[in-house]
Every structure is written in C-alpha cells, then in structure tokens.
Image 1: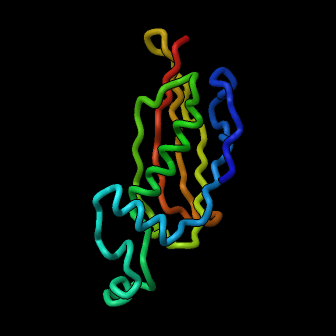
Image 2: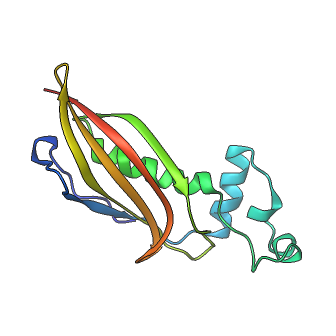
Image 3: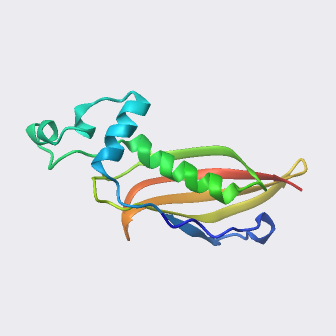
Length: 144
C-alpha cells in the first residue's frame, strides 16, 4: 500500500487536488476476513459458486469495505492536526478480487466558524481511472 504524502492543514486551498492513497488489490481472503469481522456473511462476498449461481462472474467486495478504505484515507489526511467531523459515501460500481482501489479527493470549500477552520472534501474511490466504485464527502475540522 502506498501511503499518502503528509499535508499541512494550513496549506489547503479551494480546488486543491489531495494526494492519493493506493490500496493493494482486494483478495478473496480479505473478503472472508471482512465478512467475519463485520458479521455480513452473505455468500455473495465469499463463495464464488454461489455468486455464479445468481448470475455474477464471482464474488464481489462488501461496499462497506470500500467505505473503510475511504475512511482510512480521510483519517490519514486529517492526521493529528484535524478531526473528521463528517463523512459519508455513496456506493458505485462493484469491486472484485484483484481490483486495486485508489482513494483521492479535492478540497471543495474552506470556511472558518467559531474558532475552527473547516475543509469540505469531495472523495473518490476508483478501481481504474474513471471507474468509480464510490464517491463521498468529508469535513475536516482544525482549531485555529
């Protein structure tokens, strides 16, 4: 996994493209482990034969696993300087074993409220350029 480059909250500016976080390819073992940890034991995520029996090419990743990747990305952006005060994601295309996910973002708005600086971020999770598996937003809050 390629870690993101450390950024300083004071360096953020509107429309700034944020450094990306590249995750290694999703594995079948990872899907089984996530299913056990999350309690989502739907065989669509762990059993290729079942997935094929319902018309899929094989298993697909849990959407919440991809949300976890974006959550990790936002937390790494926040670092120790800021807190994540809001985070959401909308699921897009399916992620399959072998897909490597890249998380990226852009600063959409910077504001100051009650002694805090807020950065509104637009987030993207892609398995290939232009092939989005999730989009979302987050707010980072930093004391001035």
